Amino acid sequence: MMSLRPCSLLPVCTVVVVSLCQCGDRQPAPPAGTPPTVASATGSNAGGSSGQEPAAPAAIPELQERVRMALSGDLLGHLEPCGCASGQSGGLARRVFQEQQQGNYDLLIEGGNLVAGATELDFQKAYTALDILAIQSRYDVFGIGPHDLQLAFDQWTQLAMAMKVPLVAADLQSTGGAWPGTAFVEKTVRTTKVRVTSLTMSLPDVLTKATPPPLELLAPAAAWQRAMLGADPATLRVVLVHAPSATVRKLAADLQPSPDLVVGITEDYHEPPAHPELAGKVPVVFPGIRGRLLLEVTLARLPDGPRLGYQVHQLARSQTKPGAEEDPAAVDAIRQHRLDVKDQGVLEKLAGQQPTGNGASYLGSESCKQCHPQAYAIWTTTRHHGAWDTLVAAEKARGWPVTAYPDCVACHVVGFGQQSGFVNAQQTPLLANVGCERCHGAGSKHQKAPVQNKLGKVGGGLAAKVCTECHDFEQSPDFEWRSKWAAIKHGKD
Image (cartoon, rainbow, N blue to C red; front, top):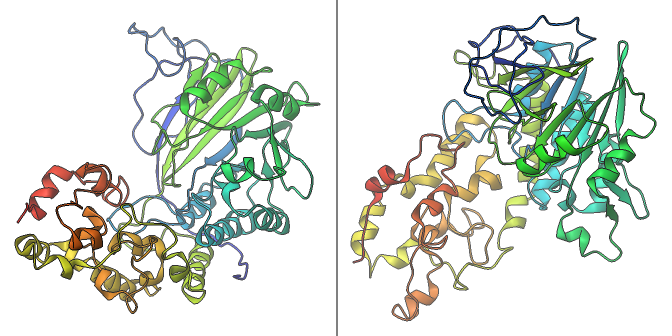
């Protein structure tokens, strides 16, 4: 395990700003860098527009105290951008830097789903994220997401308790044994109390099939009542909801007493929308996924309902000095994590865990050459043929073991994670690079009986699906498979 390091303070980047009041007509976003505002508008719910000219702004009554919050969620194991494309947003080091530069946040809230899976790598990512956010940055609230609960339950709960992480989930109750989650976190901000809770909404199969299951899942309405029990009526009420956006909106309108803010933790939005929404009179926001941007809101309650200021911070790299807009302590923690992954042989441990899609074994592209010489020749001219070399070059440039980090390796080789697939460059050199079997499937059965075992494309034959497993919106933001196919096009031969 890594040592825990204090944070430090550096200069900052800019933002995009919008505002919301009681109703949902959307207004054009002001230019980046505009100070946050609180405005009035007329209209109805959930981001719709009436199509009529907006009424003249009404006089804004004196606001109660405004509470300033930084929101994020659905990190899904992305401790920092992969570096496959230039100008990528996100990363915990940039987030911490941004929070330090903005300063004076009353509440720091991480919505949950720190990880996406249940492997040893995921657990180590969870440890690193909690080290940075809970220990170094002292976040006030962590929602518990369904993905978090996929981790080895006892190991995860012990880690959370050891780090004293303020985990929140009102709809989760322990059926016995140690449990670090609470129904809510309440914080007094100057003269205002703020109560934050979270609804996990579902349990992963690993828990529902356990005997006995370690957790009981409450219905949302009952969980909300549990979280609000004993709350002063003047308390600001904030709830994080792990659910599709339609469910988030419905709950926002239905819960009683009415929330002042609902935060949707959902993969429906890659990044925060330009504007917040209303469900009834309740503001609803979506922080996006992978920690690519940081959402800032200011919240107050007027006699006629909540009032929200809304601001999206771009967590982008410095255009003049790489690393200049990253917190050094967070950078160190992530680097140590990557070194630990290599030292503990995590790459090799994750190799061969799953069966191949077609039940055959991987052979390597050289085995295809004899029967498919033209296709093989075209492949040798493509960047796929040198995919492993790009990792080797990145390792030299960045100074950490890129070629031993599973997330990086998976998209630069054939069959990593599957039986007979890539293990490492020493044991399986013929499976380095993005070869024929990455797109067409393991070839051993096809080689023995080609007619009886024809190979098409993995992913149900959809070329776009095959490509976007690696060339996704973050790793290849400008990727369009039709134009890219022209560079690697080959047929049957």
